[in-house]
Image 1: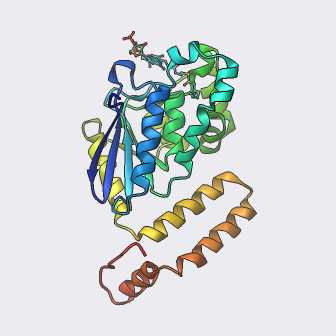
Image 2: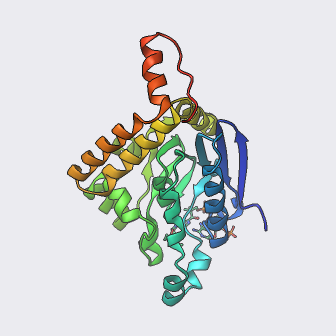
Image 3: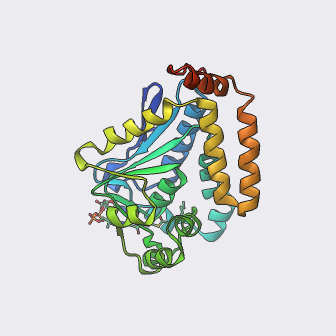
Length: 256
Ligand code: CO8
């Protein structure tokens, strides 16, 4: 099996890079299988507290593999449940930072949006140009882009196929931080280290609660958030964090 995904562990973070540079990291089935397997494996490693997912300077990913799509029938897509495999990314406990440089299009944009936050280089361009090749966003683009940037801009991007510059993406709330193009990956690693330095249990619960705000009505989200907050008090780290603040010292988190 070729390495369509490269992994570098630098605990408490890990960096996963898509590695199909000749095809602008087009997300073939094999690549996605390797990616999902890698992320699930890292998710089980306690020492890894945050994961950065990136591509290369030119492209995060330019979409699903159009050659594969072109040779697929409706029935194959339906029975092979190809996109369902992506769902496990949504269920990961470990925070996932998308580090985007260059093209972030179609399935690539959907993959970045499935991460918890996007750190983007000045060179990043976001788009859902699927209708240009006769398909529609199918891995969450119509839902996640709309929730991130609102209906009108999402319609514009999805129906016209135009790319959003990083400034537009930042202003619209799609991107969390814009970083210098020479240091895009290092900056994303820095963000991951910031996240990894916080209480691990509380971080996971907070991530789950934010996700919930995305997935249902506000009232359910508020109730869910409250329950997870109460649950956090079963964690030793919560006691440690609160006590350390009152004792004016740095907390020592154990992930328990
Ligand atoms: N799939 C396969 N190969 C690709 C893809 C892609 N999405 N994008 C680029 N490539 C390949 C090109 O074919 C080319 O290969 P080769 O050198 O062998 O000819 C190489 O990457 C470099 O690309 P270009 O020569 O086109 O580079 P340019 O700088 O001229 O253009 C662009 C860059 C504008 C990004 C251009 O490559 C492009 O428009 N790419 C396609 C973008 C697109 O339409 N994406 C949406 C795809 S559909 C989709 O994502 C559906 C998602 C549904 C859910 C997932 C289902 C599994």
